[in-house]
Image (cartoon, rainbow, N blue to C red):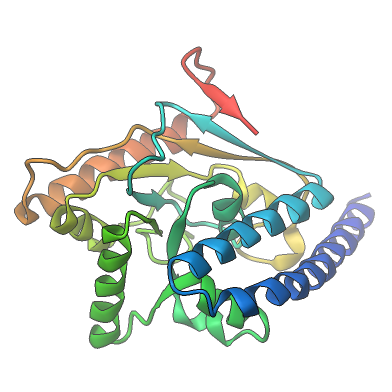
Length: 257
């Protein structure tokens, strides 16, 4: 029975990958002309196109993605979304769950993948963590995006959390940017993506639920750069607590598809 289940899972994963590639080529047809429309209009159009791609792909995979708001979310101002990172499914969940103009800080290594890398470069702000100069340029780009009223997304763990703990240690970048630009932090957790696809294998994909849980926005007004570590710790504890308690029922939750 275990062999049968594993075989079906591999077949399902191959189906998902082929579907991913087919839809990706369709998306690129829209991205190429949009890339000439400027960083703001063109970038926003590319992100909306990626959101539609995620809608279709997740639906055809039988993955039910829902947003759960522990506090009201106002999309009328820029914020810095910080999200836990534990699966390749985190990226589709970003473009599925965040339905407003955003730019994602992404690792430069992913840009080397054929076709996908082209889309990746056009839809994200890439960073090479091995280069201090490149990191500084990425931070400048993120600040410029925030000044245009567009939100940014940062995975503060930097890479997959394989520790077995709810979270691994955070980098300080997101919190320093928040303080330097007076931009609020909006923590979000993806508690189910590791169940949909484990970081150990791309053949571990399964259908099922995948929730994005939006926590209370953290304002930074009145804080200074000296408060970066305290802000980081505050957000870390919020997200850690939510990851531990995500299965608990609460009458204060509001859900939308």
